Image 1 (cartoon, rainbow, N blue to C red):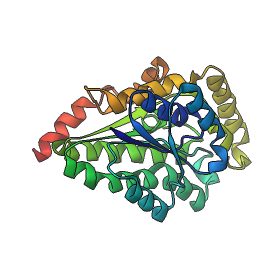
Image 2: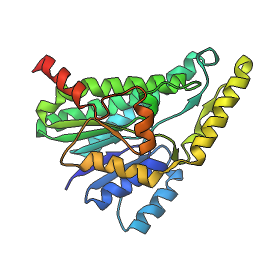
Image 3: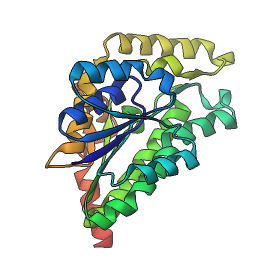
Length: 267
C-alpha cells in the first residue's frame, strides 16, 4: 500500500488532503503540531470512514522530524503542507520574525524532503508535493517575509525537480490563492508604526479576498491530484483565481518549460 506523510493536518488544506489521500487508498500519516488540536481531524476521518495515523510533529524540530521519518518506514508520498503567515513590511520585521518564516515555510520543508529522498531514490519512485502559495510567485505588500520564504521554497523545489526525476521521483508545488481556513488566525502581525495607513489598506483588501475564499476541501482536491496523478507536473494552482494571480509573474503556468531547460543542463 502507498504510504503518504502529510504535515499540518489539524485544519484546512492539510486536513482535507489527509482525508482525500486516505480515500484514494493510501495509508496516511497525518501530523499535527499539537495532538490536543487533532479533534477536528479525527471527526473528519470518522465522518469519511477512513483511518489515519495521527502523530505529533513540530516541523521546525530537526530531531523530531528525523525520528518520525525513521519510524515511519517507506514513504511514497510526502506532502509538505505545514505553514506560517506573517504581516509586516521589512522595516517592521525583526531577524527573529524573518527566521520564523524561513524555519517553517522553507527550512522544515527542505529538511523533511531531504530525509525522504534516500528511500525514494533507492526504491526508484516517490512523489514530493509542497503547498506553497500564489505568494511564492507574486510578491505582495506586507507579506515580505512570508513571500520571501515561499519564493525560496519554490526555487528549492524547482531546482531539485530535474535532479531527482531520473530516479523516479516527481516534485510538485501547489499554489493556492485565498483559502477559507484557520491559517490566518495564527498570522503574526507586526506593529504598523509609520506604515499604519498602508497596512490597514492591505488588511482591508485581504479581508475582502478571504470573504470570497476558496473552500479548503476544494483546494485540497488539487493537492491530492498532484500527489496521485499519472501525469505529474511541477506547478499547480488550486483555482482560477490562483491561475490569474500567479500569471502576473508566470507565463509558464505548469513550470514544464523551465524543467525541460534545466533538465538539459544535467542531461
